[in-house]
Image (cartoon, rainbow, N blue to C red):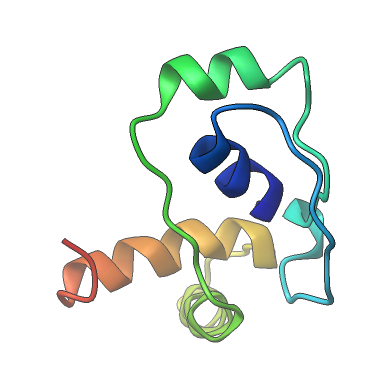
Amino acid sequence: MEAQFTALRAGEPVSVPTSTTFMQAINAGTMSATAWPLVREGLDAAVAVSDALAMAAHKLLNDSGVTAGPAGAARAGRRHARAVGWLG
């Protein structure tokens, strides 16, 4: 997601170095040229979710009987962060 986040800030598709993350499925270093028009026109903002928050959400979901992968848990982590007031 770093490429998408950076592209939104830059106003154009970019490539960025990647690193190891719990959310490997969404660890793209290059913004998709095909997706860029949709991202540019469809998003007003983006939120980065840390590995720690995604891991906590992943554990909570799985402990609750909801099967979720690490990338899917990132959304739950972001929702949790907003619910507890970490995000506006």
